[in-house]
Image 1 (cartoon, rainbow, N blue to C red):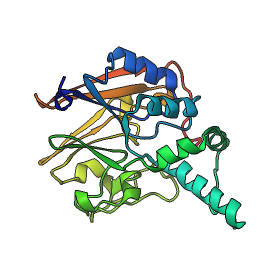
Image 2: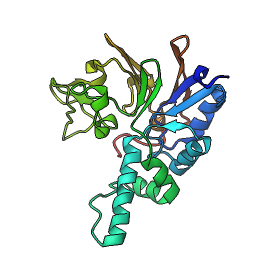
Image 3: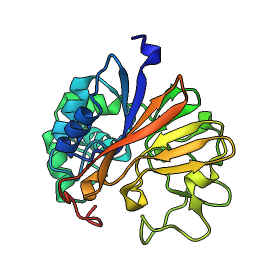
Image 4: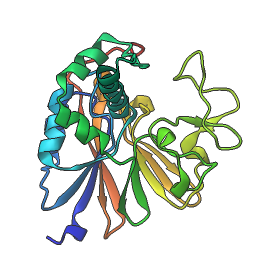
Length: 251
């Protein structure tokens, strides 16, 4: 099959749940000759086998955008190397025990691989993969990497705004970023666990934004978005989590 004619498959935030990733790949009969697989980031942390997920994705040699969790480990590792070489204290901390445990499980090749991940990947037609979303205050070519990996809500000016008391709670005077995105680029993203553990679709005037983090690590589902670029049609496949691997609110 011509590579340009392959189905495009994007998989949402795995967060260390290797058994669900393997089950979903089996369910869609993943075949690299027929499918182009793109992970939308946060393949590690919280779940039981972060290193296994990173190694599986590396082994498959598929594309992956950098999520905020990959970025966190890359930055911490870089500071740790700097501390070792200079004696200057690492300004970052790994707040949670599970973060420290996951961090210690990666080797230098894992960190190098994560560091090189892009923050956006072109898929086909108008579709791009990012981890979190876009700020409507900027056009797509001038997005800031930090917000491509972290944005949730934007204010009236289209700039990221967070609630300092509760990061996950929507701040007053804001809207969900996908409701405000007015660029011609359509986006497939993860980062935010969608209500009901089902994909979110925002059909805007110039684009469509599709959220596929369906909360696998929290006992929800792991979801794949499957796109036929020739027909311009898409569908979803998912597998249910076997249990709650991580309690919300614990980092």
